[in-house]
Image 1 (cartoon, rainbow, N blue to C red):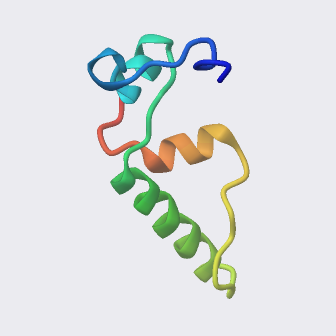
Image 2: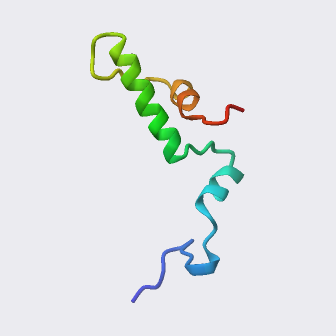
Length: 70
């Protein structure tokens, strides 16, 4: 057996994913944020007579997914 891949961690050694992403400067969108993005795309589509119109920029997605605007 070759062993674990480089960087492999288990149990208590594993950092919290959301904390690790935030520490690296990434903005994390919660499940409620994803639901807000879905609702925004449905509302955007309804205004155009469609089922949905996708948000097509990162800033648009992040803006719609932020529950507590920074």
